Length: 212
Image 1 (cartoon, one colour):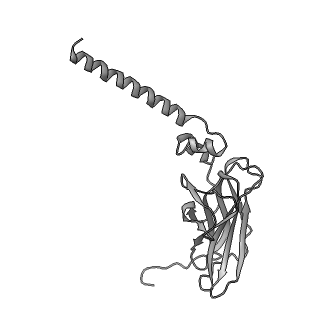
Image 2 (cartoon, one colour; image 1 turned 90 degrees about the vertical axis):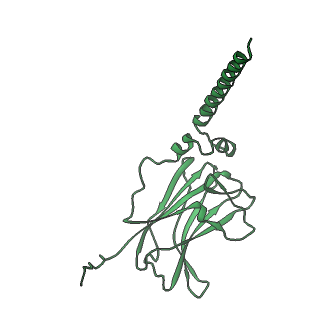
Image 3 (tube, helix red, strand yellow; image 1 turned 135 degrees about the vertical axis):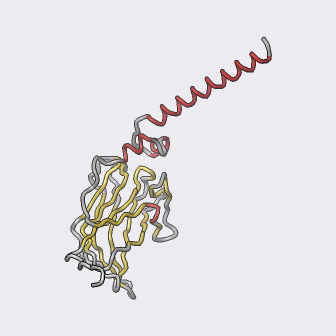
């Protein structure tokens, strides 16, 4: 066999091997997701996992929306365990952990709802999300809204709380934050994807025209 023919056969063989490997990777990526930390890690960033994360329709609310991604949250204390998995916040440690993110809304706006998007396949353990306001110049604060993942079907879901205490934003006297509590022992089977705060105004804004 000539050197040229051997070269052609070698190239064809390599192409067959690469094609087979690509097909196997595609099948693995497209396989339906299943619960459990190791199973979720196998599907990291897969189209199937992204499809499982999507809700049938947007959660109604508004008219104004403030969304905060999970990567904005940081541990309340340096000893608390935290990690991100494919952009989602989870607790890899052996103790419960609290995570906080600042919230900034227009002064005078009225908060109408707190919404949280999460993944929960951790059995009886629950994720908790709270909306808090802290008084400027003191250590006093108020709990404005709260929700948890109790009763979640297992997998991607959301929770909401439309009963809001102290709903009118007062940036002069308070600062605002969202707190997430992730229990121990769940690892990647429980994670926060994002939060959303809906708001509006009690009265219509004045119409401002040019020259007036």
